[in-house]
Length: 290
Image 1 (tube, rainbow, N blue to C red):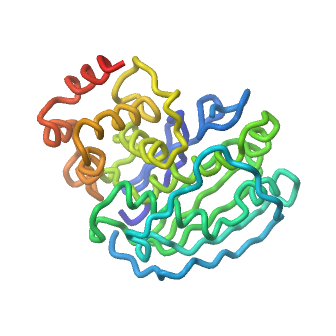
Image 2: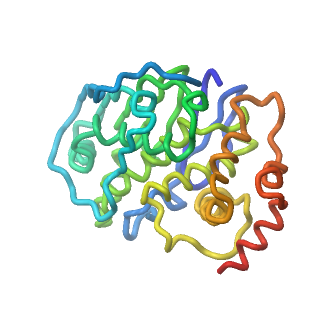
């Protein structure tokens, strides 16, 4: 794909799509990464350096907030491939904008650890991973939660300082909230979507939330019976968690089944190809596991 754009959330909102571009919006009406009480519930071979990326910061800094979830894992596999340079552009000079640096005081270390963890979860070979040289994180005051898009070898994660203020006002753990969002968007940046992210939206969402769960920021208490396998987000993600336990490397193979282009439309036949069973049969078995 030459360009991918995700406006990501837990409610899919229709957006215009052109070839190679997919869009989602993070809605205030549906759960985000978790951590807010009373608010929103809580390509290929790269030349990136092994050295820790530089971070260029414009905006307020502050003290770190405590986190109840585990610190982001930082695997060394794919370290040179999945450690893009990080640029922080904080455009909100108010107290709300300062919340980001308080919750994530060392973005230059934290985000590359997450992107390496994303690559480690989704891939097994260097040749499978897209080239990504830089991620720019923009903090801005707007109505929403976050969004991400990619062009060529660079990606942008756009985050709402207004949402950060809402999480803080609700006594939520902002650090956990933001780390969960980074896991989700990191997956969006690196995962495959079959060249048509709109058609395969539920699948893209489910894989991204699977990665967020693997990172420790989608709690198991959000796993619930019912729904449909293609509901996306946590419903689909926990289905994938179960499938991955029954069929090791299921999500790895599922992600690769999407390919980087839309020349051959993706179908749920991929479930049968990987497991020998139809997606409907697998969903029935999953529901029986509750």
